[in-house]
Amino acid sequence: MVTIKKDNQLSLEVHVNQIKEDVKKGELVLEHEIFLKLKKEVGFKEEYEGYEKLLDIIKDNEENNICRLSKKKISELYGMSYTSTLNKMNFLVRYDLIRQVDGGFVRTEEKLNNAIPFFIMPKILALKILRPDLRTRERKNYKKQAEILSVSLREIQVADGFINYVIGHPECSLYQYGLI
Image 1 (cartoon, rainbow, N blue to C red):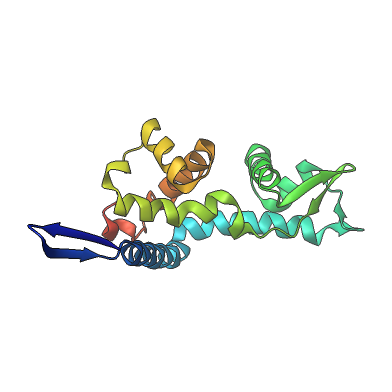
Image 2 (image 1 turned 135 degrees about the horizontal axis):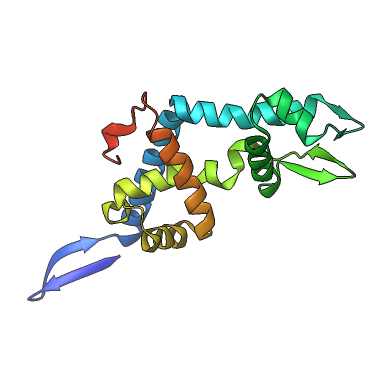
């Protein structure tokens, strides 16, 4: 508790811990609200479901827990260009959703929504609402966001790329937050 006295009279009593707790609750409510809205966005669904489809292709083609399909065959089943498929597969490897082993791929127990870029997207949006000074796409703002969220600069940039893809979709309804 902080007590501020003026001329020997108690003028203001502030419970710092209570304020911090209330702020944290407010941030979590905002973040959760954004997450629920984000999940409904067409752009987010397309991107997220694309990764899920790729994970399903790998899982559905496992023999002895290893998918031995060639990257070209996975790309054909996925219905995307070889390069796009490789980029998505590299994402899945980077975030430990799949592993390359013995000439194939193994699906891990990690959940897609726990991949750092997806996990921090609502946190970044909440942060931009609470800190308008961090809204512009500048390196210094990315660094500050990374510091605040305790993630790497690269993770912020990847998540911001997803955010911009989502908000760039013609059917995006996130405009109400004033982030775009």
